[in-house]
Amino acid sequence: MKKLLLAALLAVSSQAVFAHTLWVMPSHFVLSGDDTWISVDISAANMTFVPDKGVSPDNLSIVFPDGSRHKFAQSYQGKRKSQADHQLVAEGTYLIENGGAPRYFTMFEVNGERKRIMADKQAAASQLPAGATKVTTSRGQSKALAVVTVKAPNRTAITPSGEGFEVNFVTHPADYVAEDEIQWQLLIDGKPAAGVKVELSREAELYRNNAGRVTVETDAEGKLQFTPEHAGRYLLEAGYQANTKTELADAERASLTLTFEVGLP
Image (cartoon, one colour):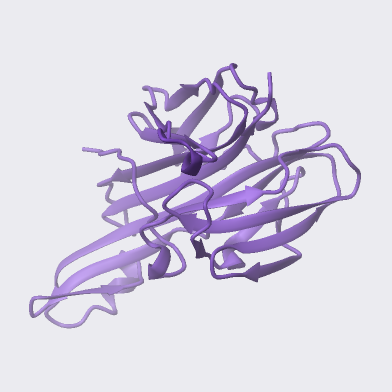
C-alpha cells in the first residue's frame, strides 16, 4: 500500500545539509530585456529563504525554452549559500533545477551491523558480502526548482517528462498573482500523485510572529490549489514515499521544492 508523506531531503550532496530544506532562488522570475543574465542562490536551511548551508552547484542546470538543458556558465560554492550565473539569450520560459538523477541505496546487515552501499538491486547482488541479511534497496531523488520567464511565456521547459516526482504547472508561473488561485498537479512517473501533503511558506517569516505556513493535500488527480493573500516569494515543499517493488528497488522516495514569485494584483 502506498504511503504519501511530506519528507525531508532524501539525497543531498553532504550529510551536513541532510536535515535542511534545499531551495534555489533566482534573482528575477519575469524579465523583459534582451540578452539578459540571471543569478541564482542555492542553499539548504530550516527557515524559508534564510541561507544556512552552502550546497554544491554541480547538479545545477537550466532548461532553455527549446527544451535543451545547460550547465550554468559560472558558479561558486559558499559556506552559507552558493551562487551561479547564466545568460538568457532566448524568449520564453526557463526551468532551473538543482538535483541529479535518482540514486539507489542498498541497506543490509552483517553480524548485526547495519551497512549501506550505493547500488541498485541488480548491482548490489554482486557487491553484498557473504552472510548479508535484511537487504533492502530504495530509489531516492530530491530536487529544487524555480521557473523564470523572459518576455513571452511558453511551456516546453516545464512540461513533465513522465519520469520521477514532478510538478505539472497547471497555472503558468508567469501568471501567479496575489488573490488569484494557483493550480499545480503532482505526478509520479507520469501518473497523478494523490494524497500528498504539501507545505507552502512565504518569505520573511523570520520577521513575523506567525510564520503563516499552509498545508494542503493533493486530490485524486494529484492536483492542489492555493490562493496567496500577499505578493512575494514562496516555497512549496512536497515528498513522496511508496513501497513499490521493481527490478532495481524495493521502495522509492522523492522530494521536491519549488520557489515561485507572486505578483501584485
